[in-house]
Length: 362
Image 1 (cartoon, helix red, strand yellow):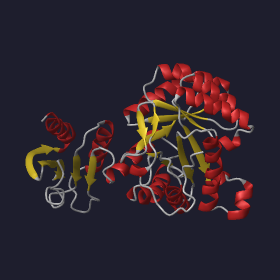
Image 2 (cartoon, rainbow, N blue to C red):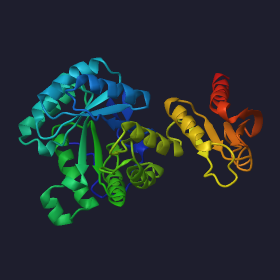
Image 3 (cartoon, rainbow, N blue to C red):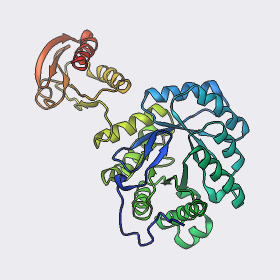
Image 4 (cartoon, rainbow, N blue to C red):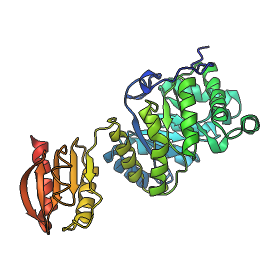
């Protein structure tokens, strides 16, 4: 038996040092890349709605989309969904091994299932054999809110309890000679998540799916997620990410992309904007929102600045590829710190996009 965790726990592995796990042609682990994930909102049996969701998420950068599989109707829907989407699909399954087998037969690309919750070892073996045959990896998802009672009695709600829970699930798969494993150790408290993932990086060679679970509504959840995930990303921990928000999945993906881009782990446009003050003499905020929406839809590696005045314009944003500095009901468009055009307020957005497109064409 090849145990892929380190009992001494004395070496923290970066994402470049974890085991490589393939989800079809998508590599997770053993590289300096963090793969983007989200999860569909609709019940999976509502095929048309789910297909529309998945295709929308694809245009916003999702590499994988997870689907809740609650019953056979959901599992059987995967075949049609798979045929009409191009993003890799993850089946999220709890307790019922039969749903995993149906999902695998219908072409799902990855399974999220905790083997310790399936029951008889024979059931787990059937899932493992099906995954081996189809070359499908398994994500083991440990959640701080659902740790086994005996571990809570010994360790309390702690990083140690989460790691021991993960070891139990991992051992079941390793005893069946299965190693295409991805681990998550999510908590709703950022510090507990940080501690658990750091200990996991010392304990396991498997790639880590990072996230803050039940983070909350968009604004609060984004802040909690950044607080919990930024320290890990900076340390080189995390091979795939989902920012979990109560709300729009587009907001999830945009937040994840912005976080990764801040550490040069995702090629996304970077938007610089000043906080504004009494010097502001044009209607900046609607323009900023238009520019932000445009950039979120475009896969361009540019730094773009929207500034309130000439004081904070070409000077403070001189490193931007392109920017706007506001004047009195007008704006100056600058490229690499050099002013190239003066434009009236009502035409600023259209002209600004024209100038961005010129840069893209060069």
